[in-house]
Length: 110
Image (tube, rainbow, N blue to C red; front, side, top):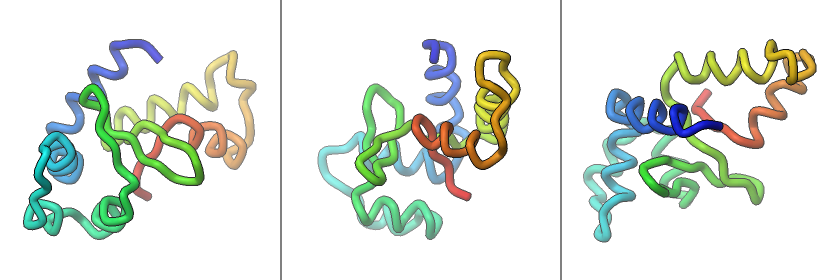
């Protein structure tokens, strides 16, 4: 994944309310519980369980001993889906196998 993708991901966080809140919370030394309480349910549950991490402006989601990049932009999610399924190097796998491969590097609420 090139640096261009990481820049697009960082920019997308500014446009998504939950990602914007999470980056603000995780960027601070002292946590703001009122801000955390304003997160949508799925995001709040993961936050309360300590699943999010911020590194170099990129949100990561921890689950099952993996830490993967958080995507919130529909455009970026579609790009990842196309790259993992339709790219000539991806092997054009089934939907299930494609999603399993994506889960090794990206997460988004569904």
